[in-house]
Structure formats: C-alpha cells, structure tokens
Length: 269
Image (cartoon, rainbow, N blue to C red):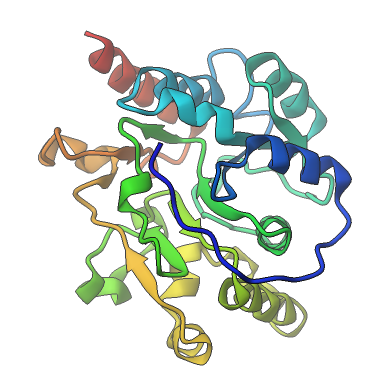
C-alpha cells in the first residue's frame, strides 16, 4: 500500500473512546485513515454506500483500502445498515442534520462535520475524507503530497483555484495531522460563533481563502482534475488516468445511484 508520511506533532488528544478504538483498528502504518459519511438516504439496500464499497472491491489496487475505511453514520438507521455492509461504522452523535439531497456534496458542509474532522486530526491521525457518492476506480494515495498539509480535489488546476464552485468539488481531500491543519479547524470553530452562516463552506472554499493559507503558511496540493473527475466530465477524460468519479452533477440521490451503478457495471465488463 502506498503510504503518506506521518508527522511528529504531539498533543493531548480529546476523550473519544469509541472513535479512538475504531481509528486505531483502521489506521495504516503511517496513521492514515479513510473516512466517509452517510445518512439514511445514502445507507440502505441498493444505495450509494453499496456502490461506494463495491468500487473499492473491484477498483485497481483499492480492495485492501477497505481495511482502513471508517463509515460515519449520521443517524441510527444509517448505522444499522452500515453494520450489515462494513465492519467499521461509527455513529456521529453530534450530528443534527442529515446529508440529505439538498446539498450532499459539500466536503465538510456543516459544523458537525468540521468538528469530527478536527477531532480525528487532534487524535493524531492523518485523514482522507471522501464523499460516499464518489466511486474509487484506482488507488488515489499516490496523488496525495507527502509533505503538504492538505491535498484536495476541487476541479481546477493550481493556477485557477479561484474559480471553484460547490459542484466542482471532487469529493476528496487529504489532511495531515499537524499544528497547521488543527489550527485551521480551530479558526473555523471560532468563525462558527462569529459568522454562523459560514457553516456550509466546502473544504475547497476553505483552502482557497488567502487569509487561511497565508496566516497558517499552509501548503496545499490541488489534485489534478484529470484524475479526480465529476461524473459529467468522465467521458471527456483519459479513462486510464481517472482515479475517482464524483456524482456531484446530480442533486438527487436516485440519479446518483442510477448513473454510478452504470459506471460500475461498465467497469466489470
């Protein structure tokens, strides 16, 4: 398995025994875990969660990554189904809102998600966050920069990062556990009090902010949109280079399931 180098940052971790034990079980040798989130709409028979997990099983050099995946359920119904489909599931009890079909594609589209990301980083784990409406065709770890704090798929090149929109996000980011990334989420927690309306910022919105990048001296890798593509773009891309496909161009869950299922069926032929 490709690895991402760990960090030497030390801190006092918060108390979270249930999550801590799952993280310990799932972590790679360099303390990296893969996280996704689902609600009852995304975790049921013939759902996005099923397609997401299946993509790991049939993708190129991806099956073993299931050992490092934790599925975070945002409600009890999602948790029950998750436990039937995957061995490592965690109920995020701090969640007050489900992912839903209104805007399911924001990478960390609410304060509860931001809080969970911050908690995992504080516990000392590097993290890959992937939306569950993302199909993994190939192992993406080789694309994550081992020295930069953040690697993120935003649907633009490094020279054009100001033109990202919510639907352009690739549904995938890597964050290294270090002082820089933890401080970033601490800043966002302060903004939660000062500017409550900023809670729907995607990770792409956050990392393109000059005040964050410059203030923290944060190094960011913008992942190539030839590798991390949206479903509506994938027919125009070099198929041999595509690593993940994100169904962000569809708002409703039914359409996401329909088209991602067709994509997986094509891969099996």
